[in-house]
Length: 227
Image (tube, rainbow, N blue to C red):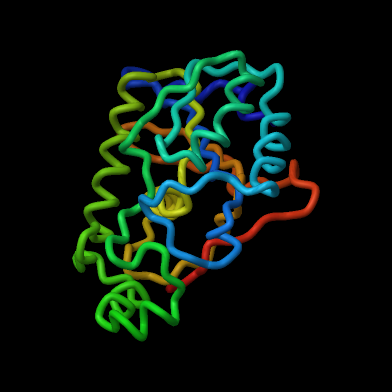
């Protein structure tokens, strides 16, 4: 079953669900180095550009009503070939950005642990309300992403929407769809240019397909399960 050719299930006397596709951006040099990117505006590397082109082939000839992308260039660059394949013009949405990691951005795990041990503990233990200095808490990021997707579901009820976003966004979406608390360590995949499909309605977020990378010739890097 192709999620783009099978319409969302009808919900009598209720707002019809939005069929939502979320695509994680392609690889960057900081992904390869395991550096925290957050709001730092990194471009795709050569591998990431190839991944974006390969992902776009999954959308060739398929119908969608809109495509949105985080404004950060690693997502925006990933969105370009996908939008071209769909025959749509992408729209930037700042709300789809990755979590703001504040002073930890650009650092690898061992450097955060050595320099900011309280930040490292909060990241490792997934403390929901710890605000990283200069950045966001997990809960703040969660609220931003959920508000964004809920608004899209109202605007695009009964329609198909593509979004290009970040690993942290996908983590939060999976948790809401499966009732997983923020504090629980992640045990599900979030690869670069992994393609995820959901039905989004006011009453439920339902996953149809998660982290599809069958389009990739050489696989993809994973978001670390824990900091």
